[in-house]
Image (cartoon, rainbow, N blue to C red; front, top):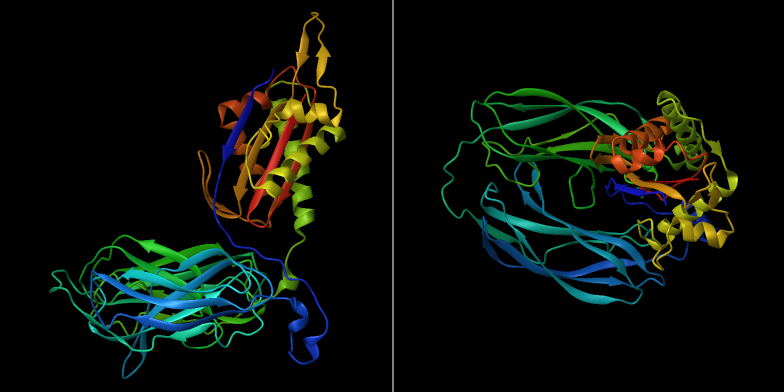
Amino acid sequence: MFKTAIFIIISLICSSTFIPVSGLSDLIPGLEEYSAITPDLSLSSLIVSDNVFTNTDLTGSVIVANTGPVPATNVETTFVLIKNGSTSSIVYWLPEKTTHEMQPGLKGKVPFQFLVPEGIREGEYTVEATITSDEYDLFVADNTISSEHPVRIHESGRWKGEHPNLVVSIDNIDRHIVAPGSPLAITYTVRNLNDHSAGTYHIGFFLTQDNTLSSRDILFRDITSFSVNGLMNEEHTSLDLLPENIPDGEYYLVAVIDYTGMIPEVDESDNFFISNKSILVSSTEKPNLNEIVSQVTGLLYLKTNKYRQYKGLNELNLDSFLSSIADAHTVDMIKRNYFSHYTPEGLDPKGRADIAGYESSKKMDDGTIRSGIAENIIRIAAGYNIGKTYSGFVDPTLPEEIADIIMIEWINSPEHNKNLINPEIEKIGIGTRFDGEFFYATQNFF
């Protein structure tokens, strides 16, 4: 029997599918893009404690409801602290509350508690929350709510560290029109206007359709920096995927330095920068994912044979029957949400081939019987990945890059590599799919 090999590269990106409809589009412009049967999420009665000290928990509750006729999936409630000043508002983002699914008719009080960072200055703050899901919400007026009363934040003790003055600027955005789920590169500069130093902070890049910061803004990229140096002036480039479920429209990119409020600063009113170059999000720009997956499949076949040729081995014939078996396993893993050589019922590659009617035994020249199906599988996310061999960004629009990364992982994994360079195999079947988050590939060998 041949050996099987398994490897996983995992990263999360949200996706969704919108169903075109007709009907209400005459009353509501743009509605034809969305389903008329949608969830209807709402927030009410946002209550928070009256007083809280830094380095302690801010507690409260909010009533969450879905009054629509269908479930809402991947529900996120984003919380921010807003301090209104004489010149501009200062906004700090708190952690999100997430729920995998909210059934129709569900309504309940959701408690929460968030640690107030030590860097937040004392004063009165409003807590604002916005609820969203993967589905389009037809009525969004009640998706955002502010606390009924402000919360007074007190400094828990005198800050013993230094007070830098951080600013950030967006220097370049690589494209004006971009599709949901596609990569967007930005160049930005971080500066400290004085000679004070500090520790870890976060830079948040948000997409907004207006010029104000709020919980409605979409977090595009979170970047962690581990130190602040005096008078630093650093240029960086960042690359990430736009959210898959972002609605079409014109957006502005906002950079907010220390957006979680970890570092006390001399001046926090200049911590955000709004780019004057807009980004047009358009679903019509989305690449043909079926064509990309088909190209990845073909490239995996060509690259496998090129690798075997380099090793002085025979080329493999692409077997359409074996490919259908490999593809069926790939589809089954996605459909039933597992990742294994064994199905939930316990079928291994040979068992699946036997059920399909594929002859998986062969008499060799020396009289021995070769039996079984060897298998390589992989799951690799679009976007950033951390793997055994490759750690970095996977662009879902570049099929050759995807195929190269898959081959690099297989070749550098001993169990996978044994299958790739087995001198006894003659045929290969390949099944590749993309589920909106991950590229899956199955190779079957005989």
